[in-house]
Image (cartoon, rainbow, N blue to C red; front, side, top):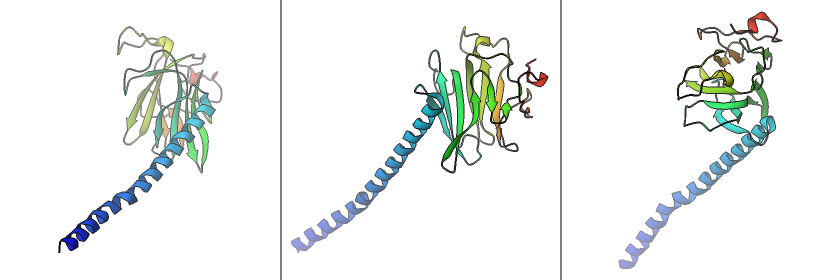
Length: 202
């Protein structure tokens, strides 16, 4: 009787361990996939912005069903925490479609999408930008660019002088990132060159 109880207990113990042995390979496989994706993302980031590239946001940023990476080159001090503005010399959003990555937004001296310069872009080159990110459950990510030289850095939340902030969001109808007007209700059209009057900030 004692032997039967011992065998029963041993069988129960082994049966209890079996599911844990099955979960381990699945967890390892998931971790391997995540690591591979992370490696690929970093390679893509370095391809577009070099070794100093940093991914600050990734996923379905535009809520258009495609994976996107927001890659930046920072300058100055790091941000104070999640949601804080960051200072960048360049920023790029790349999108993955059919296993291929393509730029859908570039911020360097100017703000551009694949069709041209964003409406509201400064005519003169900008050497650095203050970038704020805002995630909306319905609209996706919104990027707010302000020329860094027009920002007073005297204290957190200090007022900005000079040129206004340019808000950029994915336009679902046009299927690309575009700048918003000051009411945040309408998108501004793309412009082929920066000499056109509508591109000059007022």
